[in-house]
Image: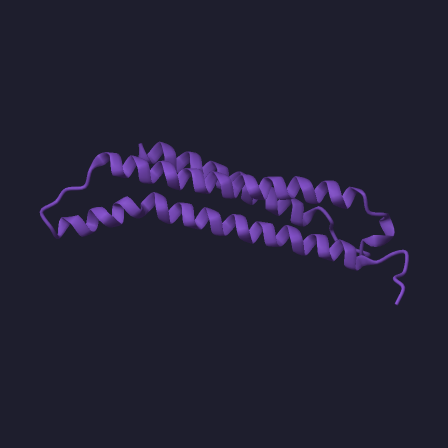
Length: 127
């Protein structure tokens, strides 16, 4: 089966790949948030016992969580750049009529920037 010269499936495959990277980045960021707040959970558990939590544990937890969130946000930003570069190589006929090719890129850039800002906030709040 031969494919026509204009095939919007190429564009949609690129969109699905970008959205898969966005989901992956959000998952990494969520894991980082859980890690950064894990020391608080341990602190609640230790209130029931006589052992106090070490403040360096909270700092380490906030640091590791912030790194995970930063990695997730940066992966989304890099995927957005890669997607934008790829769709720039497609011909105009490969895009569906009336479909915005910038929406997915703009949304993923915003999510990536918010992830980087969240990492900074958690690092500052955790130290």
